[in-house]
Image 1 (cartoon, rainbow, N blue to C red):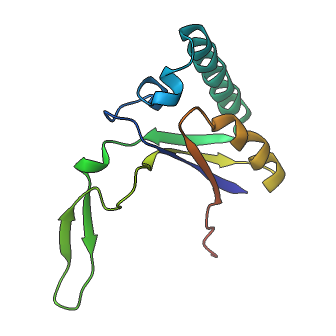
Image 2 (tube, rainbow, N blue to C red):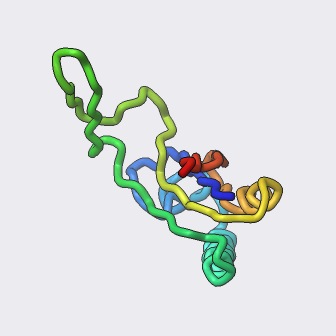
Length: 127
């Protein structure tokens, strides 16, 4: 079963890892931030070795996005960010796990200070 972990964050200025930019993370002692980063890297390595982590990417500044919307008169392009929101999609990870329970067990480990994590099943196209 494939699941996407979506990371929503509000780093100002925009940057990655988001924990280096959000106030909630910066308020923590450096030792805690370093330990959390090391634990996260170790988890990603473990998930890669097990085959459960299929990929992931950090996303660029929402202000650099471009939106394309269909209309009857032709496609309309506008500059981002597309949402009036404090939080924007900062990145994602794709998991391939045995069950929703396993996906939920892993998703909690992706939540960091100042981030909101969304776990969503990936749509599987019928062949």
